[in-house]
Length: 330
Image (cartoon, rainbow, N blue to C red; front, side, top):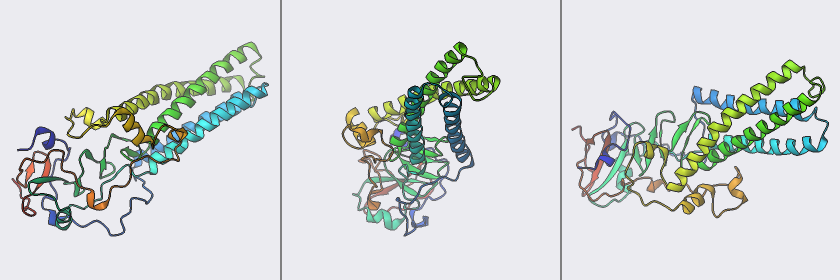
């Protein structure tokens, strides 16, 4: 019998496609290089709100605090810093949103595909009954993306996408830059309040004093809220990379069946090579590459045990024993 880790590593509850020959083959023109976008109403709304809040902060920083300031050097330096950080934050958000997080080809659990893997007798492959895919090790099914995602950490509605193997870097950069602009905005709000208290309120802003106070308080609340939230997320993601353990694996307390990489190697893979300024760029790539189509199968770690081709717990298993065994309901 498979270990509990193998049996309950998936969340699937039903076996819609139990036999491999019932799976439709994936489209011939399937390409991981196409623009990835999840059509989820909640996620799209959250992404729009994220951009709106950044632009709101941009408006208050520029038109309420910096442009009315009499100190040209102060306004120029802080304006450049804030705008560069805001641009990098939005660029990171966009890359995290439209980058394929590591989706497994849908519908590849066909008899022909399993035969093409040329697995040894006794090996076991895992099949997702929801998207009818052969699941690589450490892949999990996302009910929002409706796909199995390699090294899926979690689904984040704020980027309208899963955080997985291919886009974790962009999500980490997004949280980092949002935390930095939030901190920068809070510092500028503090200095502006001090300046307005010393000067006439009508001279420290182009808006009326009540409007200025309301805009600054809203920015202060937004900055404090997102500073705390994104700082926690940033720390959590860096910890996941360094420990080579995703959020789902940590939540389910899975015993690792894979060989863990070192903290440094994990950072190299996630951020794209040895430490360099490219680590901070949302336009550079990670070291993860598209897995060859004929190698998209996983053996679930140790596969020496013989498992009958049937539904075990919540996971469909297909035994390779001198050929493809037929999966039937148990």
